[in-house]
Every structure is written in C-alpha cells, then in structure tokens.
Length: 224
Image (cartoon, rainbow, N blue to C red; front, side):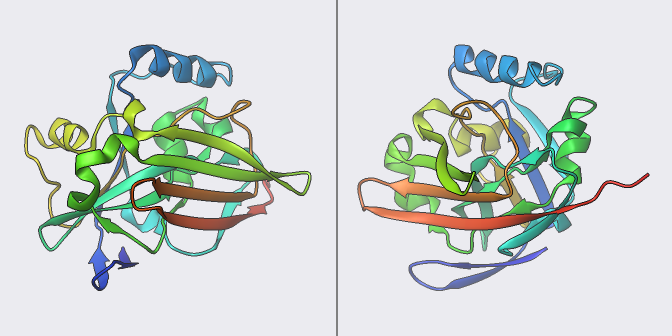
C-alpha cells in the first residue's frame, strides 16, 4: 500500500506491504490484565501470548478521512505507527479500527475485517526516542453530538517500538523494508464502545507539537 507522510524535512512516499499489529503491548502486566478483562466483558477470549503479533493485509491501510465499516459494532483505537522508510524508522499514528462483534469470535479476523486509518504526518523515531515515555496518545469520539475524550495515556505504559520490533524480528532493531507496525494502545475511558467519528493524536510535550488525524466511519448495512 502506498502512503505519503509529511515530515519536517520532506514528503515520504512509502510502499507498505507488510502490516503488523502488536497487541497486548503494555509493560504493566496488571494494566494488560485490565484490558484483557475489558475485552472479556465483550466475550473476547484471552490472547495466546503477550505481546502478540497479528498480521493484517497491507491494503487495509488508508489515509482517507472517510472509511466504510460493515455494521455498527466497530470502534477505533489510537496507536503509534512505526515504519521503515529508506532504512530509517519513522513514527506516526494509526487507528486499529476493529469489529467488536467479530472480535468475540476471532481477534485476528476482526482486525483484518476493518480498515486501518493512518495519519499523513510523521516524525523521525530518532528525534523522540530519548524521551519516548513522555509522549502522549489520545483519542476522542463523538457521542450525542459532543466530542468526548475516549483514550489518554503516556507511552510509558507501553513497550517501546525497539522492544516490539526485536520481539517480532527475532532480535533485530529495525523493521524490514516496506514494513509498518502499530505499537499498542491504552484503555478506553468509560469502556470500549462504537463511534462513527474518531480523532487521534500523538502529543510531544517537549516540543509542543502533535500528530493528529480525524476520520468518519460510514456504516454499511448488514444483509443476509
């Protein structure tokens, strides 16, 4: 999938043909257990390993502001998105939009079923790696016409990209060329629930800058 990212120096045109969703990526085992229980309340089974690397078709990536989903049971999750461009790692944000009804049957299939929105701006990972834990991910949804804070937390609660990459590659410190990985999320404030409007942000408190992306989900009717 061809994506374009604006950076401080240039525009990157990147072909992503290998998409990895790093699930259960928290550092705090108690927090992971909380998220597992949060999903278990929706009938979603426990993971077979922690962290767990789901594979999703790269053509599910999009930078569009509008996506289509089947039925009204899906929701977004803000995650950092790390990718290899020209032998260097960059970071952006993505939403691991997931069908929660299907997730109760198969997490892997539920992730494949939904498109994954990605922002169109990125930073060099090296520029923020020294204070990675201070970065904040947030998301908002619209409920009854109002924008509501849905997720918020520092990246200190999640494994670093280097740790997740090493776990996936067998010890290497960089993703293969053409690869992108989402790096875990934080819990939903008030519980996981569907929404058709989703705004996500990666905030850098030292440089007072943000990566943001908003998308709207058009619900397609389920027919049998």
